[in-house]
Length: 205
Ligand SMILES: Cc1cc2nc3c(=O)[nH]c(=O)nc-3n(C[C@H](O)[C@H](O)[C@H](O)COP(=O)(O)O)c2cc1C
Image (cartoon, rainbow, N blue to C red; front, top):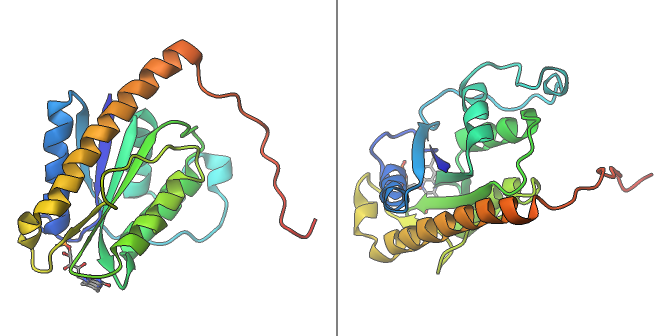
């Protein structure tokens, strides 16, 4: 069982890295394999809506998105950790998530998702809601903790002092491990839920 940990910060050793590291340690204790993918330091352009991915099964821009896609397909869960910029996930993370979710044709049903927002003071819960929306349009259950997942700090390293934030992430990683293991058992016993052909309407017809 494997979880991808996305570090959306441009900084390799910033507060987002501290958040990701805290979860990585718990996943290891729980026997869940992890891979950290540093996205925030890459040049990730936004989606241009060309829809070529519908033919090719991959994005026309061959970058970290296409590199991550097969890893995401093989993973049982994904944690997206992002610094908060102007009460939102930072632009790199938004471009990455738009293109990763839009361009990949594989079924994401029952892969477990979790969002971690890292900020100085404000915008964490808006960012949490924003990223969870990618999961909840893709039949992915969202792992939760005992608080909305956020860690606080401004200068790199300060997040290490946020005792409640880090505890929230340890609990999150434990809950997520349990969910992933339970889903694996449920899949064996009951199979995945029945699906329906998607009905697409545009409110005007
Ligand atoms: C462009 C920019 C916008 C920011 N906007 C916010 C914000 O809206 N709310 C907040 O609390 N912190 C904001 N911050 C602070 C970062 O979220 C904070 O320093 C965080 O710890 C950075 O994580 P990192 O060290 O992993 O990059 C902003 C930082 C930058 C560079």
